[in-house]
Length: 438
Image (cartoon, rainbow, N blue to C red; front, side, top):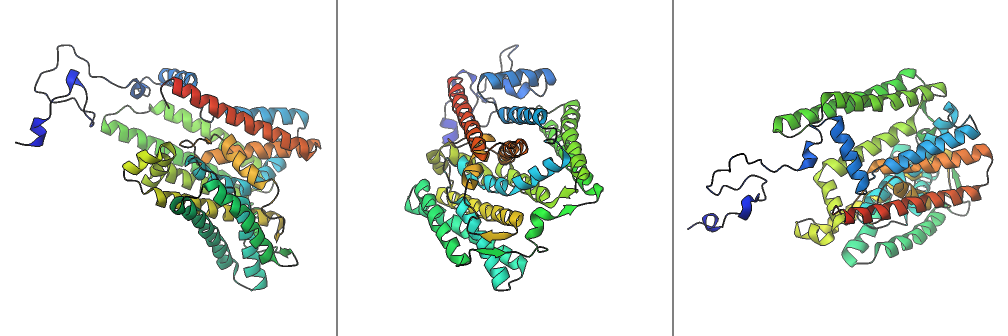
């Protein structure tokens, strides 16, 4: 007798794991309605459904990126009222370019925070990578492209080493990366030597990372058009796939409206870039990395495993996730992004020196990820958090510089914004738990 035939039917017409009605041989009662998750009806209800869903999320503590977007708007309004140059083309272009280095480091931090861990070494790793590149290229004559690859690989190896001690040996990530903060900073000073500063080629590959602009106006408008078109086509494809699968899909009118909502800021920013020097290469690379890693995080099995570890390590292990491998790979990614960010920071000053990776870089990178919406408690975050968070931090710095306010005040304001972000995250988690959604 087969095992399947010996299983009793679910009581009360419950649904088995595959989500289909149990076949217990009994016909459905007259007028019976199949149970449907009300969240699946949101798209069928159109804008009214989304408005009610928005209210439900707010009441249950699912704020998403709303606080940081509101914060960015307030920052822009306040500084623009104090100095009309804040939203000028030159200032905004420089703001985006300056934010790229720290933002790239923050993208790697997002992955680590999703695990519920921390990486305190990224500042020192970024400085060491810049020093490795400068020594290989300037002092040993290695081609720039090859020295750049070696520098990025050094960041990946260092990150993997941190991950190994954490995942295999069991040393807390805080301790491992704190040791890395000190150790790799010392190695950077040793690599730079007694001189302490190595100037890079003004017209070289790394110098061009933050100093090259696509001056043809078609570049900025072309990137905006490509981004909007890709968003529209992917949204349309997703809706059609849902329709074919027989599940609720987004109305076409909403897809058009969402695309228009993206197009307006995209073309405004493109216009502003063209009013100054053109489209910065730094912005293209930064956005490309954010989009690519967002796809990895949200659309691949690897990304789902990262989120699973952040939610519950034991549950992920029982589901067959190789916990050690994922942890090591995440820290390797964090090291790689730190090295890449270090290249951008070196490009801004066109040199590698003893202050590379020092100062407030580490705190700004972590703050950017948290302010942007990545949870310090693990299990929630996205690469766009790094973009939004670093724009908040850089906007504050830029506005303070325009108004001639001391950097001490900037640190205090940034600290207050970071505290506010963590408080919002904590309250949000508590609200979700009380609503049974966490």
